[in-house]
Image (cartoon, rainbow, N blue to C red; front, top):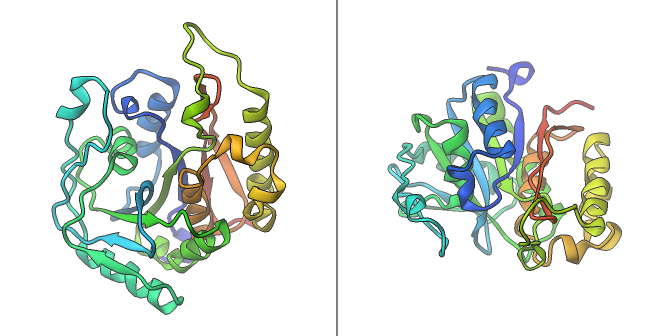
Amino acid sequence: MNDATALPSLFVSHGAPTLALADSPTGRFLDALGPVLPRPAAILVASAHMDAPRPLLNGNAAPATLHDFGGFPRELYALRYPAPGAPALAARAAALLHDAGFDAATDATAPIDHGVWVPLLRMYPAADIPVVALSVSPARDATWHYALGTALAPLRAEGVLVIGSGGFVHNLGALQWQAGDQPTAAWASGFADWMERHVVTGDAAAAQAWRSQAPQPLSAHPTPEHLLPLFVAWGAAGGRGRRLHAAWELGTLALHAFRFDGAA
């Protein structure tokens, strides 16, 4: 595989852990997404739920499935995603990050959290593709995470599917739990429209300034960890993104997904 046939990078919103089992528009989208992509040799997922002060890569050869949530149906806790790990890929990614000036490390004991296994369970239910998880660092900004993705860009030409797993709009305190379908809150759609406009036009510099430039940024993301994987995925390819999916749940939760191919 060369640069011309490199895999895309993806940003997917994983929503609640119930996405693993629910019959929902986003679940069905993910079910269909895996089969239409070129089959990767391995997958690297930057997860909103793996938080470390420096880039940390899961180097576990057989990572456990972490159920890092509470209060959900019993069936969720019985799920396992027994994909093999890829210690060599973790080491390769860490080396690329070191070369770019990042103080990266690997962890041979880390499990995979639900930001990794929930979308992969829908995309690749056979769990037969090696998986490496990558942390995000909420104390760092979007520009830092974009550069993190840029450092990992060579992996795409080596058959690695780079995925950022988070949430396009994610404020759990603002979810609308009333019965029935809820209209999307204006502040949530305003933020999503602003961010999507910059993604599809390839204006990464403007998007990276989201905290000062986007409408209602702290309503859309009171904490940044669910948006940061977008910038890792974007940096891994650069260029313009293409929206693959858009869905809203509970009035404010945006489950959008984007593909990056490096197109100018």
